[in-house]
Image 1 (cartoon, rainbow, N blue to C red):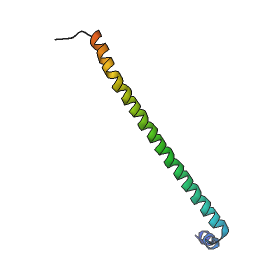
Image 2: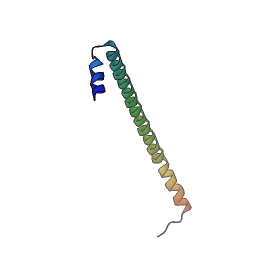
Image 3: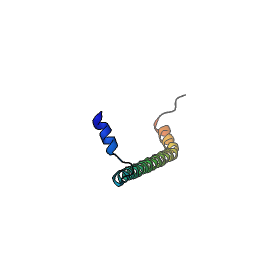
Length: 77
């Protein structure tokens, strides 16, 4: 415990080294947080657009597929 108190007494918050270290750490954290937020948002947009395209393809192909299968399979009564 004595070593811990000794380190804390030598640790000055107003020193240039501490301020630069804290500033770089905060800047890095904000940069990485912004990058991960942008990446997540972009991935979400890509997934939504891909899903919309798939739904649109199904919408256009459904009548054609129904017509083809109705010609192939006999009608049951």
